[in-house]
Image (tube, rainbow, N blue to C red):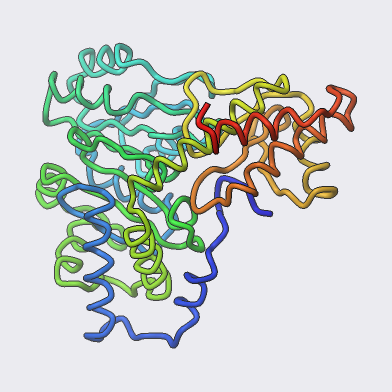
Length: 369
């Protein structure tokens, strides 16, 4: 049972759709598929423009740094992926400053406002909606609203790789939102997507940058239902399939509601057996538990109960474990996951198993209390 926060399991109906004959990307047949997928992405994002890139999410992060920073970037580092925005700036010799917090601590609206007010060169802010290194949710929408009120020309770029498809995001003050195929979109890795505001498009077109990740080139081509370079045809076919399935089976709002309920039920179940939630503001993409027993718990779950969950990275590598809630996770899978954590705690002599986790999860998930 794969319950890592990406890659997530690919549903069988998507695998079947991607297993069909290969279509050439410069044909009317594929252009029709591309157009339909684009329209579904507009519904998912609710933004003015969308762009698909044949890359991982990191490629989209690079594209946003290089295309939307014309003077200086402000990056928010509360984890591995916030840190990555800074590393991309360094790689391209782009001037930037950084606000750095512990991985369980969200950035405050006040600290971001203070930074932009102190430095008039900052013209783009880069932040994670969900920092998946620790499962942290930043107050991105509140930050974006405050910054735009101060200076509407500052671009707000949000990494939504573990947020798009998880929750409804208020994009009214966001200029770019990034996601990747292997998370809540339930596809193999290799496709990145960026939602853009009209202001972001105007800025990109004003000063076009890069070659492969030149967003001005891609926007122009994708508006004609093709791509500048070779398209990730199989993944785009799969994306159309998954988005159509979600739309036709309750819609995106129903998916967000179920994901939030699953996340809440999981957190309550694990709290009930003495676990400690790691981030101060947890995202619904995953549940992250802080414990020195994390490696032992993960090993027991994988070898004894067939449940594959993720650990941490860097200084918290052996101090957390993360359980995925993204995608079409079955209720029985989530219930089994919390049950096996309780069984592992019993095996480690931490807590005697009495079925509390499963009971709390089921009560919350199915009875709503």
